[in-house]
Length: 182
Picture 1 (cartoon, rainbow, N blue to C red):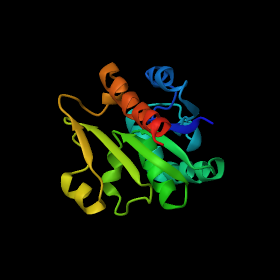
Picture 2: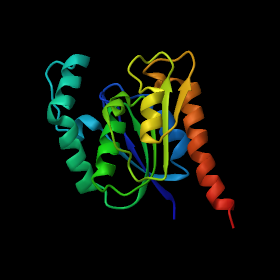
Picture 3: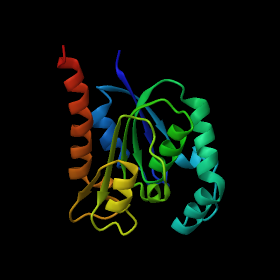
Picture 4: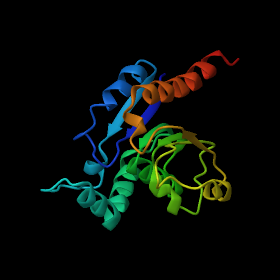
């Protein structure tokens, strides 16, 4: 049986998500993948898709709506790969009982407002060094998680082929390690 991997998009969902196909190409032969567009999970439908409007919709109740929908849809323990607002949604859902085996979140800047760590044993947080809104080292020490910071990248580092390759190699190493452990 393949490992389940749930992928949660960034705030743009599928609209600006061509980069997600690179992740799927690497991972689909090793994982049974379920993909969620966070705008759909949050019931966001806007005439003007500006970053400010989308962000406001998520902050003004969209995150909570997405968390509630994710909790209804996902009842099986799974691995999670999340981007931007998707990491915040998975984190909050995990605190409310979402069964998470591992959480790999990239550029989830809103985590800096969280004060509690989910019970998932394996949490990986990846940020670009130039992302001005990434959580601080003080926050990560208080929460009990490590931040991996990549030099020379900003908030949208997850769309870069080098980072896509690195993240997929990290995830595949876990799968391969489990296959060869007696």
